Length: 272
Image 1 (cartoon, rainbow, N blue to C red):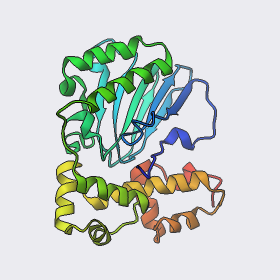
Image 2 (image 1 turned 60 degrees about the vertical axis):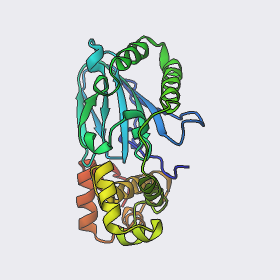
Image 3 (image 1 turned 90 degrees about the horizontal axis):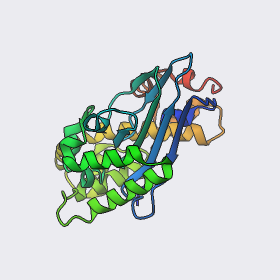
C-alpha cells in the first residue's frame, strides 16, 4: 500500500479559471498500488496566455496530447524530475496523464526509470505499434470517463503479461519508508530500516531511478511540505517548514525555489 500521493501546482491555487481546468481522478482499487492518479488538463485559448507549472513529485507520467496531429508524437513518458518546469500555453491544449508510482512504473514502461530522468521518451519507442493504437483510441474517446476505462484496461493487460520487468524489492521497501517518514530519512537510518548497506541502497537507486536516495527523499519532503501547507490551517509558514525538517530558512527557500521556481511567499502570500 502506498503511503504517499503527490500534489501538483494547480491543486494549490484557489483561483477559478474557466479557461484552465486541471482535474485528478483516482484509479480503481486494482491499480491504486501502481498509479497515484489519472489527470486531465484542458486549456482554452484566451487573451491571456497561461503558464502551467510542473513540480517534481517522485513519479513518472505517461502523457497523451489529445489534439496532436501525429499519433507517433502524441504520447510520451516523462521521467522523474529534479527541477520544476513551466509550459507556456497560448493555443488550445488538451492532455490526459497517467501518474505512476516510481516503485512500480517499470511494470508499464519496461526500462529502468534512470533512462527517463529529467527527460521524455515517445511511447511508441517503448510499446511499439501498441502505442499508436492506444493513442488513437484515447484521442477518439468521448470524455474523461471513457478514457479512464481505456487506460485501466490497458494497464491491467500490461500487468497480466507473463513476462514483465521485475521490480527491485529493496527499492519498493525503501520508497515506502521514505513516504512514511515524509522524506525526512537520512541514508543511515534508511539503510538500517531495510537492513541493507548504504552502498547497496545508493547503487540500487542509481541503477533504477538515476538519482540518489537523498535526492529522492528531498523531493518527497518537498511534496510533503506542500501537502502540509495545503491541508493545515496553521498560517505560520516557518513553523510548517520546521515540522518537515527545514531548520535553516535560507536552505528552505533555496530548495523551494529549486523545486517550485518561486519563493514560498509568492506561492502562499497569506502565510507568514
